[in-house]
Image 1 (tube, each protein chain N blue to C red):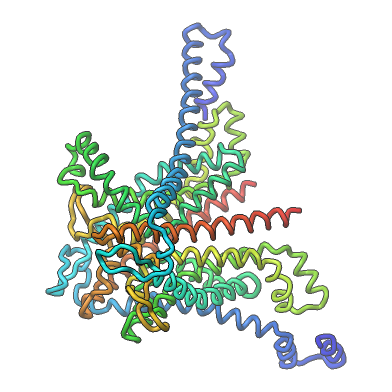
Image 2 (cartoon, rainbow over the protein chains, first blue to last red):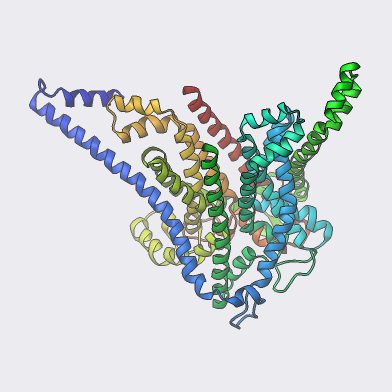
Length: 307
Length: 327
């Protein structure tokens, strides 16, 4: 910091200083000001480059995927290799079924776990639960896939919708817990105290006052969570596997949009590449919809709470 | 109902058992117990996950021991498995990713936290969150059809002619390989660097900036010499977090790295990562030793991400507390 001070003093007190010294000080000031300008512009450029990547991604998806998106894409089964047409109806339904199972596992555990951490609980055990949640959040999704493989696929002896749904459900848990806990903690103390003062028991307060107050936020968090696992591919490769036909029931290999994008993208057929782009556009559309919806709900909520 | 019991309770001082029953009927204990069960199930799942990784890799651990990490043979036919090429590929691609993502991400975070007006900063942060929400497989799709051709026809030859004397930029350039994987990974982890660094920079107390600028520092000097050093630990935490993400990233890397278990100095050469080999071979692995070797690779990956995430947390929490303490 001392060099800054020196520069400043020289620059402001140039009267008694010699001419060359004042020129040096002025040059130094100029250098510092231009460095300031250059570096600050560079940081802006960094931000701009990063954000423009999103534009590129969306642009490419719309450009390549939009042309091959048709009614058939949503209603037909995949066409055999070499034939044009066909769609990914089975993968869309498959993704839906997988997400249903995932929600049945992830939402109750995540929701109740979040309520436990925010409302009940003492010291040691909640710490352990929170630690486990954070740990689970950091585990790469492919490891969760291995886990689902060993506890569901191996005992049942085949790939299944159930196994894929379990893997996705486990991935959902940590984020559901965290967002639920956060939204519950954001509920003003006054609401709880008012309910308790009216004689409501703890659980009554939580169930009829606190959770409803945070409901919108919690729901939004869960929606984002579902959107996130909708794009998970790695854990499905060896749990849900894949299927080129319909998969009745819950106990057979099943197609899903992300796995279809993967298999189609690495295949050597042009028609399949087109389908992969279209599937990518659909998947990205879902993710965007969920995120923008969440943003609107949450910002409206924030302004409501402020007023 | 509860009014009646309190009235009774006032007449006869309640015994411990009765007190417990009353709490039970009021529902508090039951609700506590139910939510506790769900909380415990998270603990159980996490414990079981670690246990399964340990148990299901026992064959490979006994067969190969520590040699597993020093062997570069991966031969399913003869049952010889070594993790070295995969660990090498994972570390090289993650390191490349950080080399690109950290300067870019830190720059963007500085802009968002220090310069941009609050509403612009929030809007950009939302777009960057969206970038983090893009599924991995879509990055892979763009990687295959957009990044790989660019690397093959433009970036690769340019690097070769400019830096071809270095061993990293020699050999044939197929477009797929360590460098391409690193670039795609960099794009994927930048959002994590930015969002965590931005949060950390925002916790730096305003008086730090004001003090620096009062001493005559320019905006950049205040940021670079005061604010960034103040948030150093947290920024380091964001780097660890990004590294953990990069290590575990599967689909996009699998689609652009070429999937060849070789160790080569050239960044143009195809390679393999731990996550990719699990993704590619797990569903087709035959024989217990093969599967156990893949699970052991999974255990290695788990341990690496566990350590990095732990370190990231310590650093980020430490900086947040430091910022809080100054206010």
